[in-house]
Length: 121
Image (cartoon, rainbow, N blue to C red; front, side, top):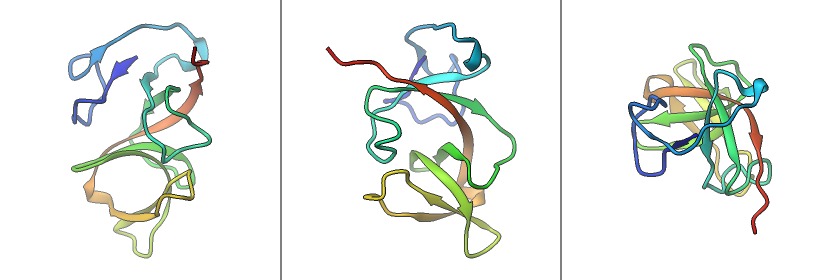
């Protein structure tokens, strides 16, 4: 798993982020795990969950992605926008606003493959 809280690189790999631990779960083979610290994807993903991501070359509309732009990183469902040059990014938590982002402003998108939750003690 990678610690991405203090970095802003668009590529999730050990060269850009500190590896904090390794886990072996066959279903998540080829994925990168990150700790989730936000609230925009609650209640599906909660603070402290490990979210497993897979780098993709193409975005499938309606799927959930971890999106890097020049200024933000967030988990959103990606839908068609009002024009073909943008995507409509829909947060999983309805308390957060939808937004349209130019396709060219997305530096990288990682498909959310799954999650593991930890009980807090």
